[in-house]
Length: 116
Length: 114
Image (cartoon, rainbow over the protein chains, first blue to last red):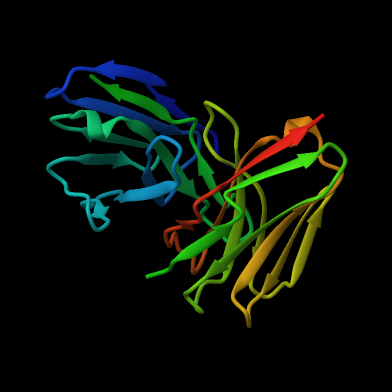
């Protein structure tokens, strides 16, 4: 399966600031996904990062708050903008394999964000 | 959209016993059902998955069963060990390769007591 490197692994940020999370994959993948996992909760999809086009956001998530870049087939960033304590969560990058026969959906180790 | 319900939310078992986690889904077009294990401080790890053309799949101590008619699927862990303690998530999507999004269940916290 794909290997995902996610940075930073954790951060403590002041409210009102922004944090950019990086996701690097060891192989080219068509689709990359960003999830949020609030403390003790399940995973909620924020958006799908498409190479060469704008990201597709899920209901309740907007580009101004969570801008996403996808400059190539192995890299994406998620920015959490104008942070408030409610943004304290784990943010996870995920990729889907290019074919039915391999990979499945693989997740990075996540970025644990605390907003104070 | 898809809705996935997972039960129980917590499960405590004695080492060596079996653990069963059940999920139901709402979208009859879903045809890919993975299970993930998440240990503290880590991202979810795929442990087993099943596609809708298969009723059961087994990998050593882990098995998954799927009932498409009833729209439910289950994870079975036999001979549980302390290292099986983690949070387990079920999920559903329409197709894996097309990159359709995964919808997750609420998670089950499994504690295996030595």
